[in-house]
Length: 164
Image (cartoon, rainbow, N blue to C red; front, side, top):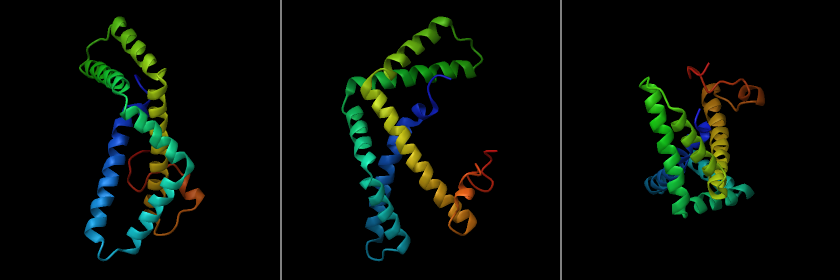
């Protein structure tokens, strides 16, 4: 209602990115003596992803956002305001027109900030890569074979996912 769902998750995506790098680094340290074929292929996949032309642009947009304290503060303000309004709604308290207008004004200003917009777009792109990789791996594990295009377009995230 307040922000595009990927916008609300963008901070999570940055954390996911950092956690994934940390996890792979720690995993590498623990398995450097005997590296499994799955780990080798996972590293190859990561290298392939990083070599994609759009990844440099994504990284630059994320870094630009992280390096701009003013834009980060603006983003944090919109997220905090949105969360406060959602909490108020969940507590069955009415939102005033002034509260909604103030939030929308702040959100529109954020979305018109090119650094913030670039960051949000970069997060959407990263989430698409993550979704695609997750889809293939999940379907492979679920089916016990390489999934076909038809397997991937059925809309399910996996057996018992509860999304339908």
